[in-house]
Length: 522
Image 1: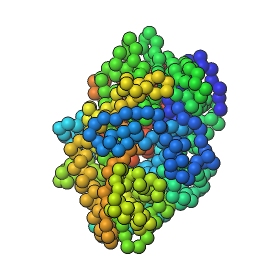
Image 2: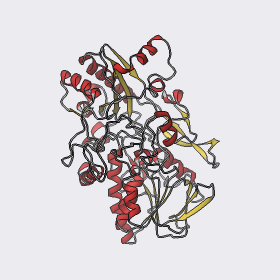
Image 3: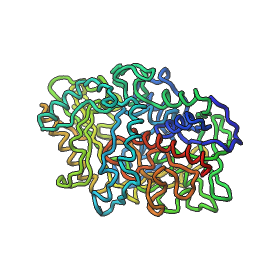
Image 4: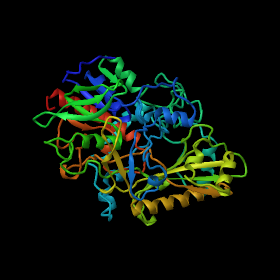
């Protein structure tokens, strides 16, 4: 690993080391570009991961204070935890299920295809599927996504077999064990999935792709990466020309440091990225960096989510095997006859015994609730994930009444479901129940949305500067050497799990940044 001077103003500084930041770092380092990665969390490893849900949560999750507002139920159930993201080297690639799906063509043209939807701030992406296709292919190969590049799918566990049986009886056609960034066979120096059943936590076998032990070590091996864990960024600075010039952060000893930069890429997730831009306001940029449009922090999306659990007469043991290796994609198309725009996926899901009481129905108690817990071994479960509508009023702002331990205002996350989200969720609940009933379920349960790992928008891509924060390359409209490199870029959310698209955009962005640096354009 390189040791780069604080005063070296030739480097690219990347804030965050997850799917976007970690991938971007490796891609740039492989091109011979010096990179400093500032990661707020500590560095873990497969050896230090723990297969205990609550201990793992404490080890990996972002637990810094946040506040919530809006009518969404999460604000009542988990007011201090509006999102489930990670504070660790590798970011949320240490805590994800591995589902890796491409966006569909219509999802890049939501405004054109869906039309004007009242209360939705829809916009077409400034990128098409055909433009991204070669980069999707590179990302799938990099991540070892099953059912691509001749990689076999993962085996189906009992949870999948129940879903598959019901789906086929209902006439669904697109049912399989998914496109997963989890090794179904040894690959890239890592072994195959051991079916341990702790897939949301850090993967102790290393079979699940994570920048922690793929991209970052490869970047370090080039001699071009200076990774600084436990570095909490507080602001981005700029020069008199309005170009970013450095990043200020507190190091692991609590000492304030400043790293000079030629280029700054923000990949802190869709809550911390806009928060940092807003915290970096100055006399030149009074509303925060890259915010001439007023769109920084707006259009927060978290996907339409919910879960359906079903009880059967015989044990299912849904918790055994790969958690999300199972998908029904038939409902992911755009079919307005269903009463809503966009579509959704149905994906196998199991909550461990420790998490189930917290998330099945937060705050619930009584005989019915106890019955579901008593029948835990007989349960099958699925997660519903679909496209939610971007709204300007769903946004990240600074709560000046609450400060973090470094004295900065925390992020307030405001969210209200759009009517389209509600109609889609009810349709998905009904179809999910029908799948299980067709498979012989004796009882079903609708679980409300809980803190999402899919946090999108807030610094969206747009063709015109007035409509968003960054152009088709993630380069901010206002500041040419400042880039957005995470899910904040998403113009709309699509129905698919976002990680593959975040990695795809990072690979593409690296090519652009390298070209711009070579041409001295930035």
